Image (cartoon, rainbow, N blue to C red; front, side, top):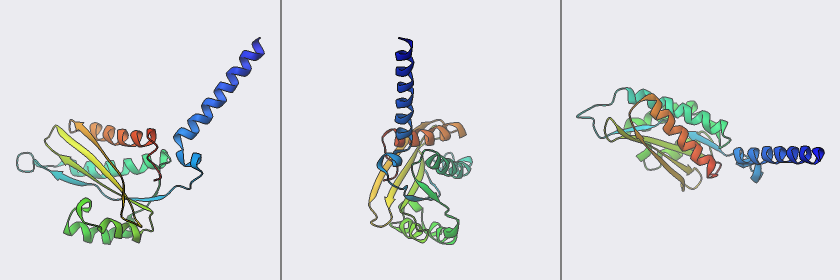
Length: 180
């Protein structure tokens, strides 16, 4: 009787491990190679610039971009490409307008990096207590929008911003929305 229980337990543990691996690494299930993605710097839309101008928010934009890159790699969602080789092109476009609203300049940047996908992101500061983080992933070859996600934040701290990005990535993993 003990050997049957032990064998059943071992089988359940093995099955659980296999399910976990396939849940965490959706690309392995599909047998698909991870697509490359260029994650561009986030923009800030400051609706309160006259009453409470943004200050620390500009530093947080870089922090959440870096966090997003790390979590995409860790979660097996995409292979993130380094955007540094396109820094001059990015600087040029940013001097003209925000990247999330530049009508295709993000695609040109991603093409210069040989990326399959491009992610543009922006944070909207509605007030000092209400913000939202938004991401949009596009197919570089066609320009089609593959994914839009947003998370609302209550509170304007480093921790709320970090939690917001973690929530976006966790939601993508749970819904199998990586490697599109």
